[in-house]
Amino acid sequence: MTLHRPDGTLRRDGDPIHLMPEDAGWTYAGLRVLRIGAGASRVVWTGECEAFVLPLTGACTVRVDGASFTLAGRESVFTRVTDFAYVPRDAEVELVAEGGELEVALPMARCGSRLEPRYGPAEQVPVEVRGAGSATRQVTNFGIPGVWEHADKLNACELITPDGNWSSYPPHKHDQASECEVVNEEIYYFRIAGRDGITPSREGFGMHRIYTADGTIDENVAVRDGDVFLIPHGYHGPCIAAPGYPMYYLNVLAGPAPERSMAFCDDPAHSWVRGRWDAEPLDPRCPVTSPEGRVG
View 1: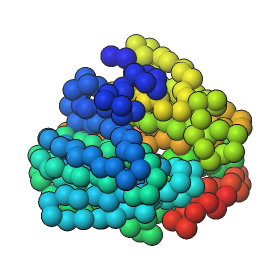
View 2: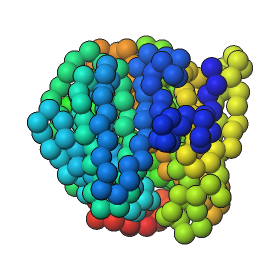
View 3: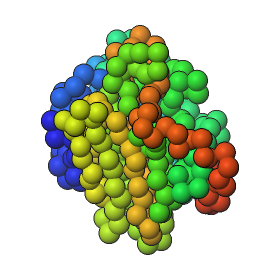
């Protein structure tokens, strides 16, 4: 399995990302990213997957099962926490770009239950500042258990790492059912800001690490704007934002557990680092965004 999917390698029919579970070589997690021209619309069939409709750039109207939601969206993933919608499996979903061009992510998970569509207001999305010092980052918990319960298998959240900082640290895994963790397939979808700290650009880069205890996987990869990384198993982290280039990533997780969970286990070699954070100051650049706009 090729874990790193650089920008362009998952393109289909003009859309930046088309990654269904079978394309990843696994069972549950998928991701599509669509580009829709100003004033234009697209119809998407969800098939066996439930999904979130998450604007990355622009605003949109979502029509599904007789319901209609208008998502205010945002200028960039680095400017605002966005509202979103949940759409069920076996659904015809119409997406309409309101105003300018729309770029919208559809984190997806193959599931068994068909739930009703639902709107998620940005004002109800918790923004968490996690870590400390150079490991300070923002976690936008829009679609996780305990916050958003209206899903069968799908979990999703967004992270923003200020330039020069580390996130997804200490390294952790979720590849077996135990007291500590549950099994989840995971997708990382990266956006890297350019020099203005707002506009995504291929100029900058970050780093992503994944490895297994037995050494069968041991990769340190440079990631750029638009790249995808698949996490089938093993420890993953850190994700490092190069100085000058803030990093965003969308996490999509889904697995076989009967109840949704994002439980994980740290690599025990590095879990001690968490004990230092209580004595370290937070990076004042976090949080970076809120439902009202930029903060940091």
